Image 1 (cartoon, helix red, strand yellow):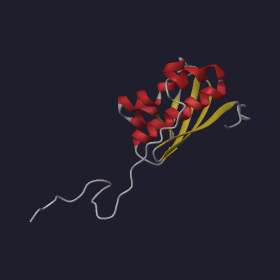
Image 2 (cartoon, rainbow, N blue to C red; image 1 turned 45 degrees about the vertical axis):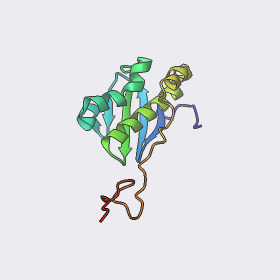
Image 3 (cartoon, rainbow, N blue to C red; image 1 turned 135 degrees about the vertical axis):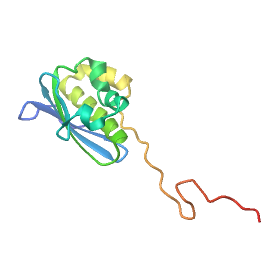
Image 4 (cartoon, rainbow, N blue to C red; image 1 turned 120 degrees about the horizontal axis):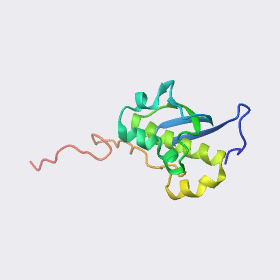
Length: 136
């Protein structure tokens, strides 16, 4: 796994992934500001469920107001991006304090979700959808 030390600027850096999304998380001690691609998390993700998913690791460890978080996320849709943000924050929290590892691992936030989109097969319309069967 990556180096457990702080960056030169005193922040913790981690990477989170989900589907085709990759989130680079920078976490520093602060008052609890949370920005994603230069915008606030509420403005970027828009849906309450996605905001809850992104902040899930902070809620479990009760550290929402102790760190300033800046995220750069690319690829995929907003649902995959929210999962990638959550994964990256969980990894950064473990770098900041090793005692968070057990509770984050029990919640399943440190494991990368391996589910990906299934590829399209030839002769079919999508991965599994075929054209309607006609007997005659």
